[in-house]
Length: 304
Image 1 (tube, rainbow, N blue to C red):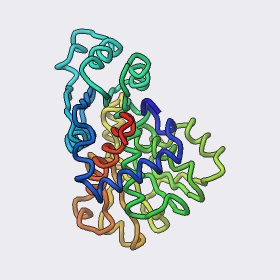
Image 2 (cartoon, rainbow, N blue to C red):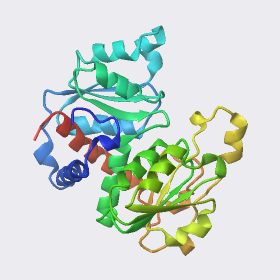
Image 3 (spheres, one colour):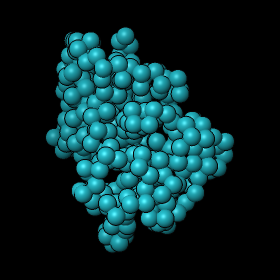
């Protein structure tokens, strides 16, 4: 694997191997502290980010490497009209690996076709976010120790939620999973993904609109925010933005071993009162993201 553009670029065996490496990093941090000495990661973020960008940077620093890049496209030559292809060809001269976020779907794929170094898709529009998916999978492994035989709820913006799309694509390759897709009618899963789920023999799924009715059956609840930046109509966003709010009261009917994940940032969809619940994993999830990105950087740079 030269690049990571889509989680489906990775086989189940490659994902499992990456998770194994990430767990070894967690348990033996010092062993990895100089693995990327002399290597440079470029972070090209044409779209705002906190956790993804900082976790990539923290990952490379903890591997002993260097980081350069930008977090605001307005400060780059893109503001002057430079193409993605030209930006990538330039940055390849200064770096060994590139993590790229872009608002346009498919931009990292285009970049990978022009690049001479590995490209990691750090999120492209409403399409894919494979390193968030690897983060989610490591979290599930650490908290549940399995990817099989579970009921997983996805709640919120399932139409534009690239983290949801990527995680569903990853989990569909494991066994005996049931998905509960919880969203308003207007934000239901895209038709292409529904068709893929219908054709998949490993999973079953149902679509509902009420979180309270669904929560008692869930082993994992993956909450997402309604994303203002994906809406063309402000009125539609305002009408839908507070569709769900996970509170202590909502959790009264949930399993004791439920695990609550969220790619963050959150707005109103999880009350701060839930943060201290032992079932809340979303801040641990951000830490796991650093370790899985360390493992991924090493893999793409072919460092043992």
